[in-house]
Image 1 (tube, rainbow, N blue to C red):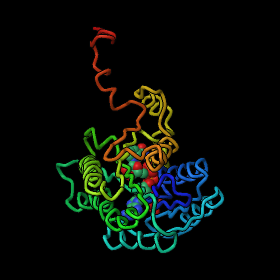
Image 2 (tube, rainbow, N blue to C red; image 1 turned 90 degrees about the vertical axis):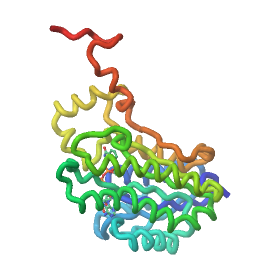
Image 3 (cartoon, rainbow, N blue to C red; image 1 turned 180 degrees about the vertical axis):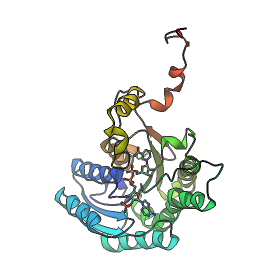
Image 4 (cartoon, rainbow, N blue to C red; image 1 turned 45 degrees about the vertical axis):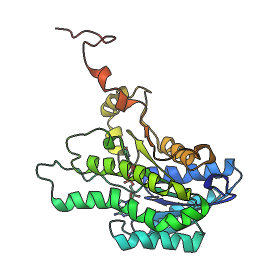
Amino acid sequence: MTTSTASKRHALVTGAPGGIGRGICFALIEQAQRDGAAIHITAAASRPGERLDRLVDELRSAGATATGVAGDLTDPSSCADIVGQAIDRGGDLSALVCNAGASGPGRLADLPAAQWDRTFNLNVRAVWLLAQSARPSLARTGGSITAIASMSAHLPHPGYGAYAPAKAALVMLCRQLAQEWAHEGIRVNSVSPGMIRTPLTEAAYEDEETHRGRRALVPLGRIGTVADIGATVAFLASAGASYITGQSIMVDGGISDHMLSLIPGRPGKPAIAD
Ligand SMILES: NC(=O)c1ccc[n+]([C@@H]2O[C@H](COP(=O)([O-])OP(=O)(O)OC[C@H]3O[C@@H](n4cnc5c(N)ncnc54)[C@H](OP(=O)(O)O)[C@@H]3O)[C@@H](O)[C@H]2O)c1
């Protein structure tokens, strides 16, 4: 039985109450409903509370069975504990979605070592440890792992001293896991969002000039939504992706390939006015 064709699915989504995490949860439910499958979502948050409880209620209202789990993913024992609790309450996992992450901005010239470690522990080490704990379960279902990286994994930016290297490491971690676990039927991919409008990034879009300036850089002419990322993750966990592993999919409206078009004076661009 593969993830994608199973009539009963179970997805563990980390960072589930966040902007993109919510989008992923609802997209997985929609995908299961299109496929005529039942789905259990384990929504993982950094801490218990009303926000997580409300999400679990919303997921149930949308047609899933759902439970919430909480723990700090920078603590290795929490990673194992979260996977253990998920399997105890929802059965074997058909999908592990590692979405929790944070940027922790800072320049390399004076970045504290503790911040470097925290950024890597959350964005990279936690994904490895979650995957390690989930491996036997995913091997039983022929399941998949999808991690949320960033366009910063592929493009450096001053101020993202630890975040960009951590997300780049995450992309390679997924490729490495894909090679090591393919023989067990586990697929592993990453998704790299571009500019996505979430509560985390909302402040930038409240200023209309900044919003317009950002939108103008995107060849597809709009800022991404959490549904754009959710749809990609749901596809990677579906039957349609059963021959895809070790891939990194950029979901950015074309912005990261747009760089050369910004160079003044190149063919097809207006010449520089003196
Ligand atoms: N928004 C963008 O434009 C964008 C672009 C590229 C990549 N991304 C990536 O997309 C993912 C989601 O981002 P988002 O925009 O949706 O941000 P968000 O709303 O801040 O969500 C981040 C989630 O990560 C969880 N988290 C943070 N630290 C944690 C910890 N120590 N232990 C457990 N969970 C922790 C948070 O849990 P709580 O809710 O419990 O606090 C939150 O749910 C991240 O990996 C981010 O790097 C986002």
